[in-house]
Amino acid sequence: MSECLYCAGPITNFTTWKTLFFPKEPLLCDECEASFQLITGPICPICSRPQSSEVSCGDCRRWEEDLSWSGVLRRNYSLFTYNDAMKEWIASWKYRGDAVLAQAFQSRLQTLYRRCCDGAVPVPIPLSKERLQERGFNQSAILASFVCPPPRLFSKKYTASPHEPAFLLERTAHEEKQSKKSRLERMSSSTRPFRVLLEKNEIEGKSFVIIDDIYTTGTTLRKAAEELRRNGAKDICSITLARG
Image (tube, rainbow, N blue to C red; front, side, top):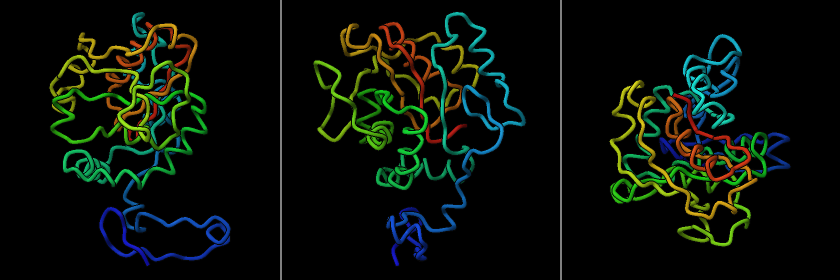
């Protein structure tokens, strides 16, 4: 019997044919596992927002009707809804320093990447120096490190360590936390907070998947995608742990 990574309660392991041939230690107890709501059923075909039909949601229609943003981000894939349990989990993980909690969703992120974005270069959303110092770690970099090691496609390797994904983007502006902004403020912001750290010829013709923790309005992801697109990226999608 092991302990739940989140609540520290006991995990009872039941042997099945699957666990017999593919043994893997569970990281969450049944109660915690059930509290996180996987996205199923009809979703927006662009951002993965759960809804009653498979049509583009209002936010995505607004993005796609704007010629300067249309097609910048091909598709976002999210695993979970941003329900109360996920909000509390992300607060514990991101704002209270419990970085190890992300391991609970490593396997699901790997599966999502292989199914939807296989072969694309993982690009974590970078933090500003101030935010990184405040938090102590980059939550997007942790998630990106789970999906797969970045292929050696570039003349330089922008990594903090051999075990971290390539930092191909740099944050050039320290902004107010997105969680403190309204939906309208996020979507109407004209700042360009990212820049590419590579030469344009190293971006051209390649596919990228931007990794972040939460998709709310898609502003941050699209601004990162815009910078890659301006430098010749062929295709850009994104993966987020939760869809707000």
